[in-house]
Picture 1 (cartoon, rainbow, N blue to C red):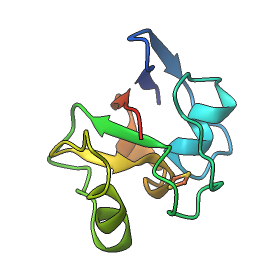
Picture 2 (cartoon, helix red, strand yellow; picture 1 turned 90 degrees about the vertical axis):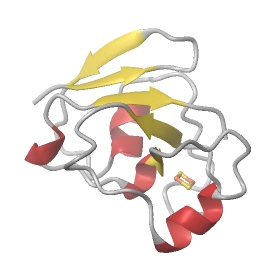
Picture 3 (cartoon, rainbow, N blue to C red; picture 1 turned 180 degrees about the vertical axis):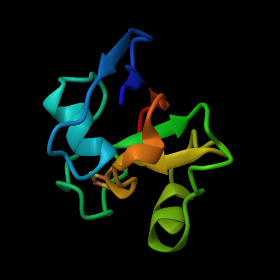
Length: 102
Ligand code: FES
């Protein structure tokens, strides 16, 4: 399935997951601008901040450690997630993911 990223400059790019485990890895492997992923995916940097734009009935909201970290992000929105914490499976087909700054 296709997952579309809208990068930090507003450019959209369709990606197809291969062996990536989470949305951060998918973004990095596809050179999506604005996903710095400084901590490498261990939920401690928030430089992989994204907002989920669709499929909101299926994609869960941030919880626990992820939500605590997001609460320090000034431009957090209701549907903000840390992309390293969103695991890729077939339910993400046709997802639209907007990259935000940390
Ligand atoms: Fe650091 Fe996601 S890569 S919190």
